[in-house]
Image (cartoon, rainbow, N blue to C red):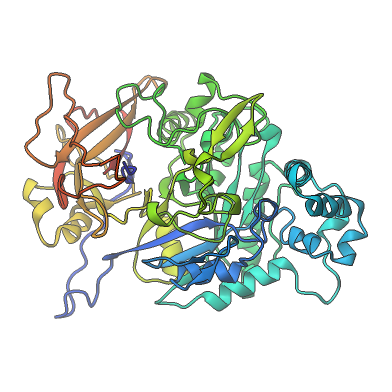
Length: 582
């Protein structure tokens, strides 16, 4: 089973106004089109051999330029010697190598004399040369150093006159960027991991090298406090005139720290901090190779899909097991609800984010296809042994098998054009959605006046914008008493993927007391003649998988689903969010 695709629409009944339909000034229907009509597919989270952990685990061959080439559909040679190629290229890519020790391990492995003159680098070089257990120990030493600070600051220095790894990253993105054909973003990953708890963010620049190249990546060596990251991004925008955003990921292994109701120091969150997080983190990565972060069975016991892609054994640093108390602060559905409560207290919601998917591939290969999955690290690339291999081998805490990795995910972005500017702007306004890989075409709009037949009109998207607001937006106040919000949703199957089972609307809301939170999942349209049972649950769509032959037939489900659904439980006194799941 592939993961239902998620699209977000946050509803704040007292805020914002829906855009009016522009008057037609040209005979050509799309001459003055103010809204996007195409979804662009991409991956905002890919690592090359420039990332220290990727390099330690055997990604030695592929550079940032190779990652861009693969995403464009070109053939590249992976570290296992096999040729890799995508059957369907992506529209955009962010190469997000870790800021900490960026490019360092390539120099260490090459025996760079300037590196080997430093004790820590020489030690790692000798351990890597020895291989086996010593090489694995070197990985753990580097990982701990990335989380706590460099063993020796000089490790970060680049010989005078030599192009730095960051300069190479910037140059590779600028050379790969082809407006209208392929968008290559400049980016990096900030790898904060206090006590092994994942607080990582991917940083994405809207700008080219003439602006982004003026600064160095902000790393966890500078600070592990996300507030310092936001201040740095704010300073970049003010000094350069550019734009930048950050995307948290893997909240599911954050030890309960990603979506707290306090600040980094455990003190009460301030309005200023909430505003800065909202400003610079409009998106969160909901699915990737290291599991799904939508929700958890203990948080959503009535959601039959809550158990999908679960990684709930330990934090990222393998230092602590996950506990039930951590869960509300690790999963995105719960975080959206906590945001409603913070909004009631602070007058601003730091967790009003859109949802995207990404791979977090550390092989340089941005493939989320089940039949073209190259694993998390080079050690997980296709081989007869990988199905029985271990992703994490720590018997004192937990063991995770390689087969528990997900072939996921991608971001779908509704943008006006395939350019850095247009795609970034769409991400910033949250007109995006997440998928575990299938490229389903999904639209979601919210408003007050949609009619049932609007969903099956050929110009449903135009009606969606005219009468309401799209994915990621705030819903306008009710125009009159007694009316409930309506949601226009359309979903078209991936032409090379499976047919569709159902569309669901997930709702979370805050009671007027400002403290009590609830959630509910509604089945709103589905394939076939199924009817909900006495428990209001829809029967399963069925299964055509042949386990003995490892095949399936695409004979059940619908090619397209569409409906207008109106919230039957709406209370205008309650803050609420809604998102669609296909």
